[in-house]
Amino acid sequence: MSFERRLRDGLAAAAARVEPDTERALVRVWLHRRRRRLFRPLFGAVAVAVAVAMIVLLVPVFLAISAERRDEAVTRELAATYTAELPDTPGLNLAGRWFLTVRADGSANVGGPPGLTIRGPGPAGTYVRLDDQRLRTNLFYNDLCTGEGLYGWRRDGDVLIFTVVEDTCAARRMLLTTSTWNR
Image (cartoon, rainbow, N blue to C red; front, side, top):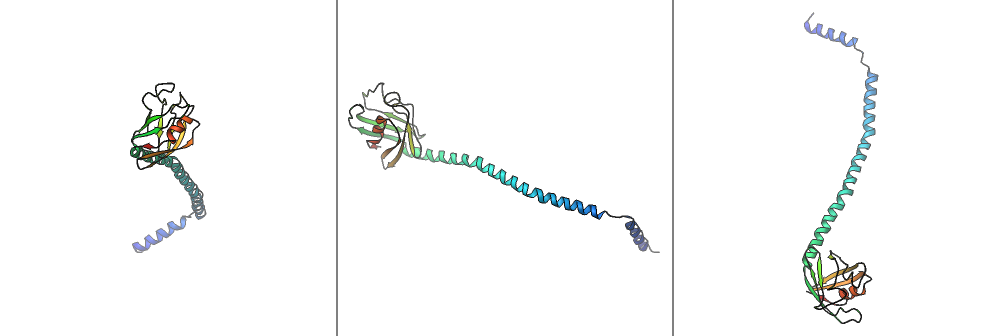
């Protein structure tokens, strides 16, 4: 008998002794496929949840950075000294030339006419803050006003115009809105 024939017979005899457990192998394949089907949507849901969480966490950061850059650009454009001439108003003692110096960082100083006396040496207030749409201030807080005022603003050429958004202080309203602020 040839070598090839002996090899075939030997392999056939060995194959006849092995009985594959096809049923068990099919069950394992079926379970593996079922697990993949069960977990695939779960992995998809987890991926979507992570993406949503990243958006929720990062979008406000990017918006804040964008708003901060916009505010900086606007206040750099406004950076100048503006003056306004207030008429004499009974009971307020604010008549004269006033100045508003806006700095590039959005902060500002306000000064009154020489010799101005309210209850202190000048228009006391701890802050005047401009951003891209609003001016927030507590000007006159310890002399004529309580609380703070909120004003909208716009610029028309070299003129800065304020409108009251919310303020209960008559002196602040008069100072900021009744006169033209010229650069």
